Image: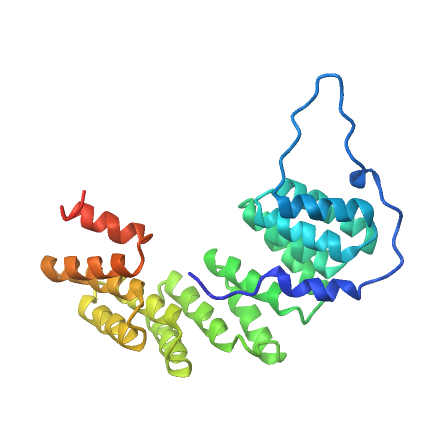
Length: 281
């Protein structure tokens, strides 16, 4: 589920104003000495390598280190990013941004329990950090944990939902769908669409749920509406095709799989469907 969750980039500016009294650079900031066996030197992207040099030259710069952590995450150098985050914590203390970084990195490592723990620590240290709540809600929703609903309600009650109201309602719907309270889920998805008719994720969730419920014609109607709103919506045509195939309307299904693939050449599921139907090799 794609939900437009904000990323850690937004916190670079925040870090500039965090505590200015830092400790001296520790050993983590010093170049590693080569031993007689000449170990293989880890390769970093040019962007990460430039930032590493800036950090070595400016070990007390929170901004450079935070940028390095973000770049290492982007490069999937997660263990190195975690080490840099540990050093950042040593310098600025037990800060919310450090725990937010850690949660994001542990998510990439598929350590869901660790990520949840880190995000929970984040919101204890900074109660109004919207991103941490969103990330927690996402993980708890996937686990079918009703703490997701508690956090959604908390955000609405405490004026933390500004700008993400529709996303929160969508999460609520996804949670209900996962625990098979389908009517509540559909009500949430309808609310999302009514509040923001261009919110394609809501159409996908509603239509996919109707497909799961074997209400194929109703699902088609949802995706036809979505493709009317956005005629370049490849996912919409793909789901129309899936429903048509379920209704044994192979010719129409093939046409819509082709349309989805024409709009998105990287649409693997549409390509595989056409292969399965013998249209392409």
